[in-house]
Length: 156
Image (cartoon, rainbow, N blue to C red; front, side, top):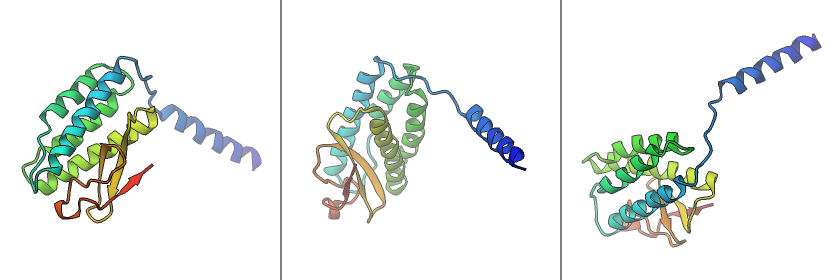
């Protein structure tokens, strides 16, 4: 019985390890490309801070994400996930657009943290609107709710 349990556990562990997709390493060429994505993200968030109920113009951000994906390094699959989220953010419906941009921001924040690529930027989350954003500095400036610009938390 004990041998059967060991065999089952080993089988499960082998199955899990074989099912994992091998992650490509982050290349040096990707770091400045990711920094460009971060800079374009900052521009989008800052523009949202000066407007109300308008879908963000993400065209330059999409170009920077495409360029990152084209580098074919360790961030290629992440860049594809970002692009998918940004496709939703292109919606003329502000609510749909904000959902897509928040999803993009979550992916961006996770990538920054996992790869040590913060560059002075932080992840923020507002529980009232249930949305995430990434921005330089530590000051809370909620881009999703003009009437609640100071609503949110810095997420480490």
